[in-house]
Image (cartoon, rainbow, N blue to C red):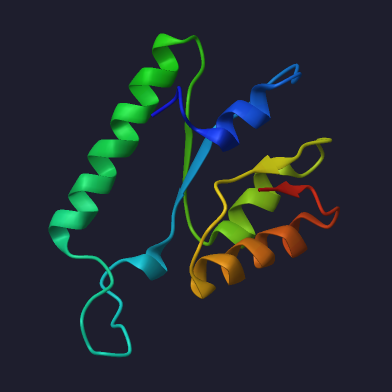
Length: 116
């Protein structure tokens, strides 16, 4: 969804350029939880892939695009931002795991350029 995405709206507000990015984190797929269940089923993975493809099409219809990376967000986002005076806007997570991941991304950016 583009119209009611606060992170996207904040990123484009006053920006000269924006590069939307989605990072598929392999740790989120087929990894066991503490209870022994899998973090993401094949159906959930397919839904996510279809959702990201839909997001890419919607962004392209607006004249933008979507960069897609595979890896750990705390590695991939700083790599994509290297050499640019860039900030990263993200939807703020609610659970402990999401908040820890966001903190790792912020540390990797080496400039505190993570906005929630």
